[in-house]
Every structure is written in C-alpha cells, then in structure tokens.
Image (tube, rainbow, N blue to C red; front, side, top):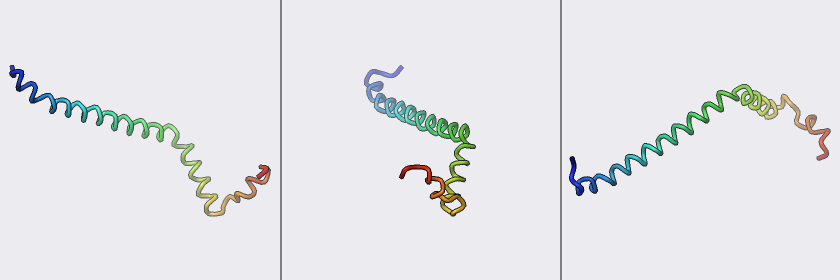
Length: 71
C-alpha cells in the first residue's frame, strides 16, 4: 500500500485523469446525440436542403412564395 506522501503526490495525476475521462465522455455523448438527431430527422434535413438549393438556383421563385405575405 502506498504511503500517504505517495498518495498525496499521485492525487493531481488522478484528478487530471478523472477530468479527461469526464470531458471525453461529454464530448462523445454530445457527438452521439448530434448524430442521432441527424439520423432521426434525416428526411426533413434533406428536404430543407433541397428547398434551399432550389431557391438558390432559381427553380423555386421566392417572389411567388411570398406574394400572399404582407411584406
């Protein structure tokens, strides 16, 4: 069993390891949740991108879409 002075010397390394483990878990969890949302709403995301590209290339005329709006 390590002596108290050895334990005191190892404490900063242990806390640093704990910090990196928690930070890594948060990063991986965030990445997995973003990928899950993209997978869940993939069809909606593709449709929004298609509408955006269609408006950009003039396939959909934005002026005809907003005629009924009082702008």
